[in-house]
Length: 206
Image (tube, rainbow, N blue to C red; front, side, top):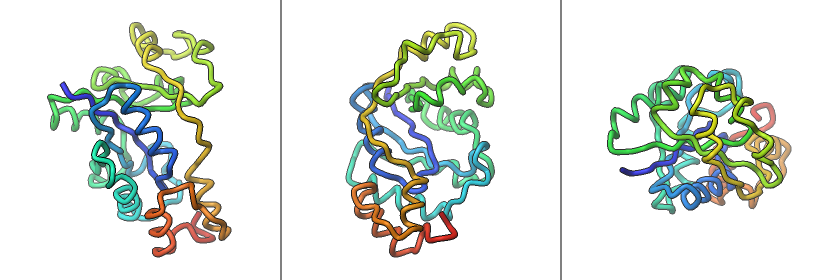
């Protein structure tokens, strides 16, 4: 059975940190591919400023086109409306019954999983793999702190790894563009050029 990682986000814009997480996941969790799951409207970010989905998708395509192990899932932006992970995984599971999906999250998200929509169902549809920044101690996170019934806390805590340190954020990139500052070495050159050519994230938009 194929193992495909899912890296979800608005990618607003995609940056080198996203790409490094995906590459690290390929090697750390023995994945066949990583699929970038481009979100439509996340339930907790309904007011987040962002350009049209077509721009975020175009930038993501530019950023991933040279890595054959990366691809993009456009399911959520094609459907429109608020996106819930469990609904997306239900569809992916039906479309690819020969694939086991591994949802990639950060250590800050792990304690929040218990509040995700239909988390019990979601845990049966995919595995979760958690990355932490260097310095984070998974030992400080106990099964009881995850607020999920057995065997899920133990299983979730067994699929963890320390990620490559790269302090980048899409919000900081948007701010820098709005202030006329350079984003070189923060995003792929093709993405930087796309942002400038299309006038994205200018003052008032970031």
